Image 1: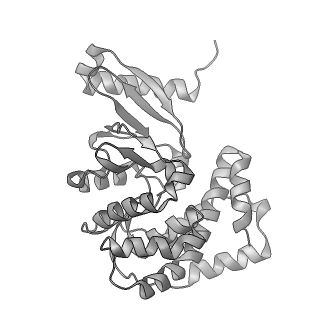
Image 2: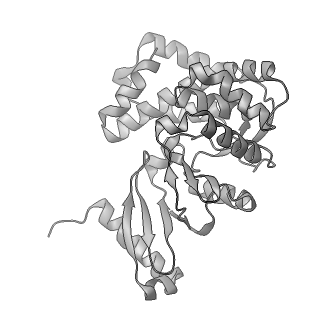
Length: 284
């Protein structure tokens, strides 16, 4: 008899969880649909009683930096703001949240001034919240990633860069706040209630300028950086563009190294060549 696949095992585990905690959903009937994502399996729970999203915590996800316990706590922290989904259940290794109906942006639409203006307002509201208590430690994350990369891809220049990133002091925050840290077109939904953010698995407390640097670099907005930062200032995120620009630029090497390490870890975990291609421009 052929053994069941990992996806089938996860579905079975999730069904048992639903039957235990959601008898109304079980009675109404439900379907499980896999949801594509960069860090692995999530499942849409489709039911007449309402749609939900189930997110699993695997070993690979933890290595990549996701933590469902932290994600659950942070989503509860932002619940009044309605910028993210509402948590319905945290039962390790599963996190179940409301399914947000909305349309992801295309990369072209995401880069328009109108979207950047709306995104800036959403970010300012998020950054005005008090910290969650989960501080982001980039060097701790670098050390974790270092244990899970392909050693055959290391070069002397990379080794020197790693030592530098692990030894130097991170920029002192302009403003410590809750940040999302994974803002891109696919994670920003257009809904009847405005922009909503999904995939909060990397959210933590950090400098707001680190968030802005991650958005600029992750979305290839180098030529649009000043325009985006001005939208952020106009939305009330900061008073003066000059120190904000300087701080974002200080964080850019840290963001680049974070992206490089994440791509290399995902390449090692999945063998998917897209991660090698994304890492290549960042390799020292």
